[in-house]
Figure 1 (tube, rainbow, N blue to C red):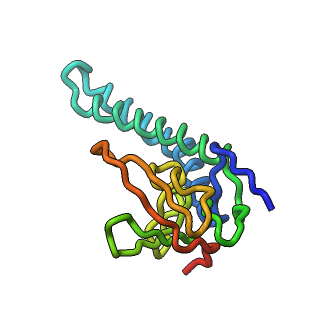
Figure 2: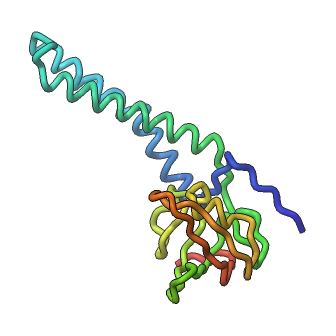
Length: 166
């Protein structure tokens, strides 16, 4: 069985999707109204060049608008439910155990969107350097990726099983 994994697809649980949709609804509705009121109140204080409250409110507005765009992008590209998974093949929605070359320690994590917060184990994004390097690899295979300092790190995939939740 072959899986296709679109780079722009974000697999989300129904719970994560609902949480993000609720945040978007709040920010694009009441959130925008609240920040507009703050800006208007600060504007009424007078000279805008020396008005710290006005500038702080405009900065907050920029952050809200940025988050709205981010949420819209995530939700537009979201697939709700279970990611297509094959036992023993690393992909989104899999619990992965790797061993770092030169280190006896094993690390287990969930390969999923960072928006899947709340998982009882660490979550690594498929778009992170490690996630991108191991995505599509099979148990027993090795993968290398670049560290921020420019060095290369090699990991061996020890296990890849569908995430079962808490």
